[in-house]
Length: 200
Image 1 (tube, rainbow, N blue to C red):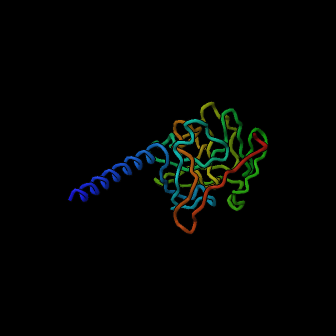
Image 2: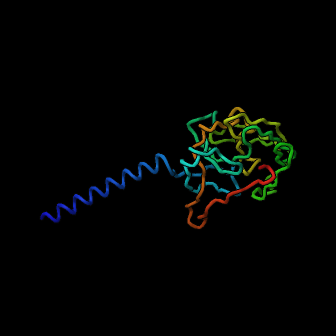
């Protein structure tokens, strides 16, 4: 009888420890996120689920190429997922569908060329509100303590080019860095690190 009580006590302790660890991890280290929409096509698809590292930016600022989850200033209750393209002090421009950072054209192999057109796009967000995206925009000058974030599907993304909805993203509005797609299983992958040596 005593042995059974000891086993029950150990089980309860194990469950409590696991619960505390899970709470700590979810609160401070890793969080799940669901991709909504097509702004990150072809890198991330609508409905994919991924893990976000919430701890990584506590000691180091975001880097160019990081895929981040952020709170847009136009609707801070929502969360968007975008790629960091501009760092503090950078000048960014979009010319005929191509991105230029500090007057240098950026080579972006992860962008599908079929998404790039030189025209005005009228898009609709999740609330069915219309917004406009130009394939020629800027220049934008990134202030200290902020990043400039863009969707990989440039013609279908409400991002930092839209100053009313997103604009320059302060570090404090960044929830974390996406690093692993875990669902659907057929699309499971670790997100590639993208480097831009010409801008380092």
